[in-house]
Structure formats: C-alpha cells, structure tokens
Amino acid sequence: MLHRRSTAESYEKIATVIFDHSTKAAVALAKEVRDLIETKNKAGQPAVLGLATGSSPVPFYRELIRLHKEEKLSFKNVITFNLDEYYGLDTDHPESYRRFMNDQLFDHIDIPKKSIHIPDGKVPGDQIFDHCRDYEAAIDAAGGIDFQILGIGRTGHIGFNEPGSSRESLTRRITLDRITRQDAAADFRGEENVPRFAITMGVGTILRAKKLVLIAWGENKAGVVAKAVEGPVSEAVSASFLQDHPDARFFIDSGASHELTRRKLPWLIGPVKWTPQETRRAVCWLSSSVNEPVLKLTDEEYNEHGLSDLLSEHGPSYELNIRIFNQLQHTISGWPGGKPDADDTFRPERAKPYPKRALIFTPEPQDAVVSIGATIDRLVEQGHEVRVVSMTSGNLRVPDSGVNKFASILLEIASTIAEGWSEQTDYARHILQLLAEKGEFGEDPPLLRQLKGLILRGELRDAAQGLGLAQENIQFLDLPFYESGRYRRFRTSDEDTSTIAKVFHEFKPHQIYATGDAADPSSVSALCFRLIEQTLAQCQKEDWAAACSLWIYRGKEKALATHEIDMAVPLSPNQLERKERALTRYHSLTSLERESPKLNQQTAQQYDSLGLAHYEAIESFQRWRRT
Ligand code: F6R
Image (cartoon, rainbow, N blue to C red):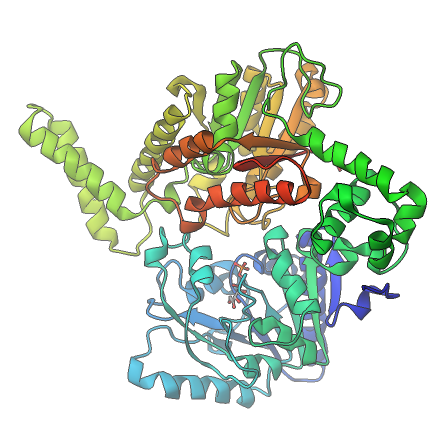
C-alpha cells in the first residue's frame, strides 16, 4: 500500500528546482557562476569551474557570453576543467568537445588559454593512464573544482560515466553505452561513426567538486532524472551518486520534471485539484499499478493508493471508472481527419469540413513518416488534401557514402549511356573532389550539404509514395536556421517564421500535425515547433487559424502516455506493415527511428491493459493547448 507523504522532498533526494523554461534556468545558473567568480575575485583567488558539453549547457554558455559582453563579466581569473572528450578525435574535429567549447564559449570570452583544461582525445593508448592521472593532479593543484556543471545522458551518465561506473572512479578511458552512441548518431552522420570510447572524469572526481548543478531539459530526460533524484543510489545510474553530495542540485525545465512524483503522482504528496486531465492520469496510473482494467478498479484500490480524495469528489469507483473508460474509448478513431457525415460529438476531430486540408510538418524529412506514417496513409486514403512539409533539409545526417554513391552513378551514366553529359560529369567529379578534400570528418561545404539534402528529398518522396502521397503534395522549406548551423548550435530568425507563414497563407490548413513541443529545446524538432507556435501566434486573427486544430505527435524516443492521448489512430497488422515498408525507403534512419513501430505497438498494448480494444498498433496525438 502506498502512503501519502507530506512533501515532494520526501521523494526527492536531491534538491531539484523546476523552471518553466530552460532559458530561465540558464540565467539563474549563470548568475550563480557570476557571483562565484566575483566573490573569488575579491578574495584574490581563481574560480575553478567544471564544465560540460552537449545540448544542455548551450543556453547557459550563451548567457555567460552575454554577461561577458554586456555586463563586463571577466573570465581572466577563471580556470576550467571539462568533464570529458571523445577518444580518437582530433582537437579540430567538428564534434570534438574542445572544438565545441571553443565555438560555444571560450572564443567569445576573455579566459586565458592556459586556464582551459579538456582531456586529450588523441593521447596514445600507452599514455592514457598518465594523462588521466595528470588531469586529476591538475584539478587538485588548482584547489579543486568550486562549481561543477553537469548534464545527464539517457543512461544516467554524468560526464561519460556509463552504467557500472563506481562511486570511486577517477578520470579514465571508458566505452560509450549503445544509447549514448544512438543519441550522438545525428552529430556524426550515423551511429557507426560515433567514437566508441571517451576519456571522462570519474564519478569520484566529480563528487570532489564543492558545489554541483546538473541541468536537464525536455521530456526525453524525464525518466532518467526521476531515477537519479528519487531512485536508489546505484551504479546503474551514475547521477544518483549526487544524492550523497552535500551541495548538489538539479535545475530542470518542466518537461524534464514530468516523471518526478510531485508531477506524476501529486496525490501521493498533497491535495490535488482534480481537473479532467489529472483525473484521467490518476485512473490510468491506478489501472497500470494494480494491473487491472479501468472498469474493474474498486473503491478499496483507490483508497489504498492515495486516491481517496478523488473518490470523494468524483466517485464512487463504478461511476468514475465508466466515465474515464468512455473518455479513453472516445480517443480511438480511425478517422484522423474526422468522419464525414457522422455524429462527431464524441470524436476527437470534427466531421466538417470534409475533405480537410491537413498540413503535416516534419522537422527533418524522416520524422513524420517515422512517427505518424500510418496516419498520413489514412488521411490520404480518406480523401483529404494532405500536404507534408519538410521544414529542414536534414542534410547534416546524411553520411558521405550517400553522396559518393550518387556521384559515382552519375559518372557511370555519363560514361556509358548519356553522351555529351559534360556538365554532369564535371559536377560529379567536383563532388567527389570536395568529399576527398574535406576528409572523413571535415565540415561539408554548401555544395555537399545541398546534394545531401536532395538525397533526403528523394527518400521522403519515395517513402511518401509508399503511403499513397503524390510528389506534388510534398514541400521542402529548407529553413535557413538549419542550413547555416550544426546540431545543438542552431539559431533561428524571422526569416524562418516568414517562410512558415507563407505556407500557412497559401494552404490555409484545417488541421496541422506537428512535433517537438517536449523535446530538448536546442533540438531541431523543438526549434521547429517553436517556430510553428510563433508563426501561428502571428496568424491568430486570420479566419483559417481560428478554426484550425493542431495535433501534436511525438518523435521516436518516447510515445505519449495513455492519459495524454486525445486521438488514438488504431492500425491493423497490414497498415503497420505498410508503414514499416515506407520506413525501409530511408537509408539514414537511426536504430531508434527504425524501431518506432514498436512504440506504436506498445501504445496499443497499453490501451489493451486499460481494458480497451486490443489493436495491432496505435499512432497517438495530443491536442495542442495554448499556454
Ligand atoms: C558532456 C557530458 C555528458 C552530457 C550528457 C547530456 O560533457 O559529460 O554527460 O552532459 O550526455 O548531453 P546533452 O546535454 O547533449 O543531452
């Protein structure tokens, strides 16, 4: 039986501050760092910072740069130690952590070069031990780390301390976990190119810091954040060792807080306002906790699981169960565009107008097919005017081999079939030359990025054809923010919103499908979603916008939880197979993306366990609620 406790802290074993947006957290963190630097300055001592790389610290570094440029914060008296570096990468490799730190911070502030310390990813194998020992010694010689900034990987790693790292571990070379390599796949244009090893500070090294803050954004981190903050201290989740540190805190955004007890099961902590969403969440949770379908939940089970309040407000269980069951039942619809000529009182989408203009945004060319391929298929089949809009070209994820193959085929055609193709031959040779010049890891010049984008266009057209969608219904925006940036470091501008606005004005959709609301804020999908939101806000007075519904779908890492679903589109085995076949048309899918149909199957199993019909798979959507 679960007993109600009085405060969130009784579950959270690390002080956790939830910010409504990552930028606010970044500003608060930068302010603490600034205070530390100034206090140390006054005492005539250097401030020693431990720094992290990856997406999470990007807004924090932007704020530090702003403090330096606009508020004259000096870093002359700062010494830094980075947590880790990929092993085997040259320092000027675009994905090396040294390069990242230079681009994101060091090149924009006045820190002396000699004060920067980052493990050397190219140290020869027989010198790794000495190099790591020297790194530890350098930290001690600097007086130890005053303030350590950490991110958290989906494996629970801090630094690159993958599961199994001991509390006492020191700086060393480690093998990267499969999940960590999957998460880095896009940066390296394919999982196979992600380094297998890294040099990282150990858990013991990190715990020696005097003060630590771990930052995490987005729902994809919510599960691991909850494990670290509320779970047992365990080598399986390195970040859980922070529970034993006297001055460690988590700064997280709302998305990353979703799995904490105070957010997920607030009724275990204190009084709850029983909104319809909260009620549905509680009933779904109870059903899965006791492993009983909704209609079989009893008063005793509600009471024994901290839900007596809910019963007294909305009970008895018999009536509450039926109400929630019906709500869940009404989310199921094989008619994502609305069922023409049917009573739509309890259907997720309105019947009229029919047919509808459905606008499907895909942040990169593969996202929509991966996540909602079968719904696209349905919409087309049911006679709606469907337009798939690929927001970015996605060219950064295409491996060089794709370009090589294309240029080689072009050369072969020119030499065997197409006489007089001299321009094409020159083009292909030029491409091959650019590939050779930039080497395996060099940055792609614009011509290569352009060709890689075209290759992905071909893949999307091909996949969409498998779903019955004609070529002319696919539009490519190649949003400027993506074309001039790199993963984790993009910056959007008005040019991006005006490109999206043109699509709205021209197409005037009745329905929009979009993703990215809960993703890490610096990811392509989150940036794309924010652009859609901004553009919609600009258009809100227009007639089409007032009547337009916006359906959120989730990407590959995490499906919507059953209580979050407003529309569940069931798939038969054949429909799932069609989607799987469409996915095989993409060559540069990550393993997570390839496995996305499994998420659809899991959602179907969850509906089944709640006592609803058992389908082969379900694609799920949440209605967008303006905040
Ligand atoms: C990076 C590091 C890692 C990352 C973690 C989260 O120096 O030590 O632990 O902090 O993998 O990465 P992002 O922020 O990219 O999600």
